[in-house]
Image (cartoon, rainbow, N blue to C red; front, top):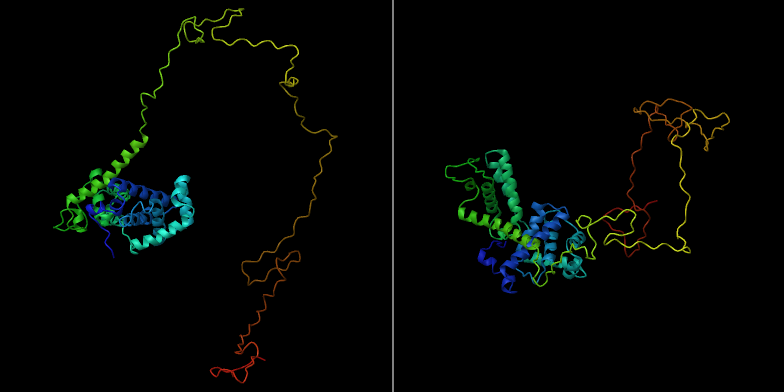
Length: 421
């Protein structure tokens, strides 16, 4: 099987960097976008994160160690990786469902530009290239199982251990967007994230099961020759993902400051002078109410409407005024008058249905003979007489019809020939 672990210098010499002159930061951003798309796509399809989605992410990272992002678009590769991971982890999804979900996650213009007219053909073709690239090395291990194994051996407060496990689990989820899976084995990544979770939660493990005198730390019984410098380096790579994401979010959410040339001119305040033609505000001191009986309008008030001429008729229908009902209505009579005719029903009253025979729970007891009962099936058998014995089957080994054999082709001699009568 091929080796899928590289050092940091080899990670900076990928085909995207060497052949297509893509810088290292851009390639890391492409990897993060592809991983984020796989996670969103798998979550929308109700796939298991620590199983199928994580396997698809590992396939994605390994694929671009052999190919360039410019040659193979990252979103098509992400769909092919998740499609293959669903088969490997026994949670398959139809290619049609993956395509429909991708249309929802991407814009219509971006989807048509990347996937073209036949997205299914592109995903199926890229799946074949993916299998050849990873050399059919489909089995992938993840740090999740090692986290559970390590926590079971540690001693301490159960609530603090649970909190530490949850924090380490989240670190593993977020580390999928980095290239840690291409640098170290899953057991070493599990030790590093457990160490980071212990530092952040301020919970230090003092004792553990199976401790030996030569074990200085709890991970010495699982992984040997793991230095503190190695753990610190892995922890810094995990924490760098949050720094990059925060910087990206700040760049997106930061509003753009307008240029000085595009700033609007300052509005001139309205003068409070009484000679101004602008409408005066009732909240200002210069506003005066019109005198009673005067036709003078306040400053800024709209002119009164002219009186309508005699020849102009209104264009609406004048309805009569609404009827006013008295406040108290007459009481309702206690009984109908004698002259009232009762209302006859409009349906025919049929007689009640006859009783239906219900089979007894004990079928060995004959049912009661009641002429009023209506049987649910054919006439009842006689339970007092046992049923007749079924004769044994008679087998006749013969051909269904008589077969004619010419003299040139006699019947075979390996079995008897018994033509049916």
